[in-house]
Image 1 (cartoon, rainbow, N blue to C red):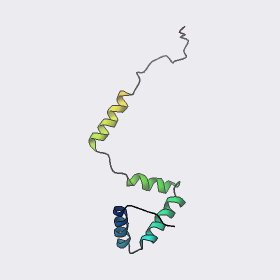
Image 2 (tube, rainbow, N blue to C red):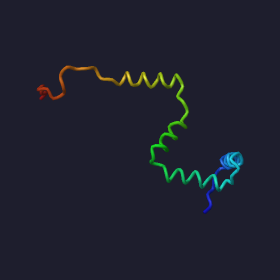
Image 3 (cartoon, rainbow, N blue to C red):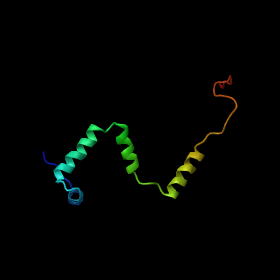
Length: 86
């Protein structure tokens, strides 16, 4: 099977494979095996989460502000506590 990939990605793969003393094919096969064999495992999920970039302080602040703005006020009575509107 042949897969067409952009030149920039191919150069990146060549560099990674060279650093690991592997061929591009070996690196690609190992990556695909990990992707398909363990895609649903807790370890795979943890690896993916750990690979994400850390959010900036500004992004964290924006998220906290959005959470606060989306909160509903606390009410003593529930939506179905006997009030009927016609």
